[in-house]
Length: 66
Image (cartoon, rainbow, N blue to C red; front, top):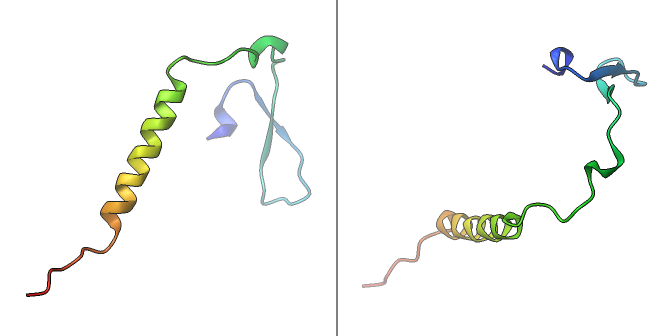
């Protein structure tokens, strides 16, 4: 899949079965500067709560003794 992606070139590796790619186009220095999106902390909090809910739902159910 990555072979057909634009902007990537093959890079050599010591193992022939492992593939590696490098970015062919130069990345601007300010591409990773900044705070990021405002909604990112809320998304991370929502994903954390969702993960806790899934873990609780996957746990064993308690049974009442009659």
